[in-house]
Length: 96
Image (cartoon, rainbow, N blue to C red; front, side, top):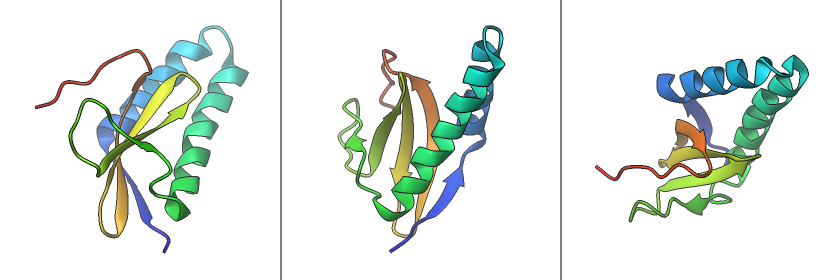
């Protein structure tokens, strides 16, 4: 079953911030990194549980997949995947 992909405004802003930061040194690499986020997201349409459970949460529907040194965090719902954040791999999330 192919899931519908949805992006939160926060996740898209995270990607834009990452691209802006990388672009200062290499516009080409910035484009490559941004493309990879969306490529990985498309893979999840068919393989939704490919990512691991986010360690900071005790919830198997909150998962992450790594893209370079970034964590692409998503919420797995019955028919869709909602991308909620993109953070650096060393950053821990707060569990509220």
